[in-house]
Length: 395
Image (tube, rainbow, N blue to C red; front, side):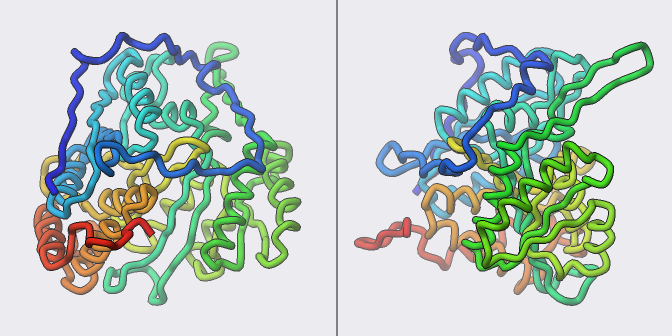
C-alpha cells in the first residue's frame, strides 16, 4: 500500500496562533490528578483506517532518518500518512513551534527527530522542551536493552526500563540574572507530577513483569525538591506490595550502572537525572543509535530516538545509525494499534543487526545507513505486509 505523504507549506498555514512563550509562561505548571488515566486512547483512524501522524524531522541526521522511515513504511504498506512539519531551530520567533504543536494536537501522535535551538534570545525557548511542556508529555519511557552480538561493556544482557519525569526539575526554564554576573535558576518539583510519574513507573513495572523500581534522586543535598520526589515514591510504593522499591543517589547510581547494571529493573527518575542515566546506559549497551524514547501525556504521544542527539557532525554522510529512529517508528505503530506492521518491521531490524551482522560504525560495524535500510527492506519482502482477510491485526 503506497504511503501518502502530506507536506504542508507555510503558505497554506492558518494565521499564526496568539500563543506566546515568555520564560515565565512557558514554565507554568499544569496540575493533573495523579489518579486519572495516564495515556489517551488510540487516536481515531481516518481515511479508511489510516492514521495521520505529525512528522518533525528536526536537525542534523533527523531528515535523512525520516526518509528511511518513509521508505520502509511505504514498502511495508503501513497505513500511516505523515504531515511533515519542519521546525527551524535558527528562527528568532516561535511561529514554527506554534504550528507543530497545533498539528500534534490535531493528529494526537508525532514522530520526531531532535530539534536544536540555536537562538540565544531568552524569548526563544528550546523547541524540544516547549513541545513536552505545552503538550503536557509528563513522562518519557525508554527500554534500554542490549542487542546480541553488539560489543558492550558487559557480557551479560542488560535490560533496564527508565521512567523519567519529563516537564519539571531543572528543565522548568525559570531563570534570571538577579544582579550582573549572578544567574539564578529555579528547579521546580510538584507533588502532583511526581506522583503521576511514580505511579506510571509502578504500573509499568507491574504490566511488564518487573519486580523492582528504583527511584533516583539527590535528596541528601536538595532536601526539599528531590526530597519531595523521593517522599512521593516511597509513599506510593505501599500501594504496590508485589513490587520492591528502593532509592539511590544519582552519583552512586552512575557508578552502580557501570559496575553492576543488573541490579536495576525499572528506574524512576527526575528530568535531569533521567538524561544522565540514559546516556550512561547507552554507553554500556553499545551506543546511542539503538534506543527509542516514548513521550506520553494524558492526550498526546510523541516518539523519538532515545538520547535526543542531533548528530549534526555526521549529517549527510550516510553513516548515521537508523535503528533508533526506526525503533521509535515501531513504538508508534504499537501505540496506534498497527501491531502486524510493527512486528514485521521490528523483526526485520533485529535480523539485520543480530543475524546478518550489519551495523553502522557507531556500534562496531562498517555498513552505511542505506545498506542497513536496504537489508531491512529485503527481510520485509518475504513478509506479509498486507492486511490478512478476516484477521484483526490490531490485537
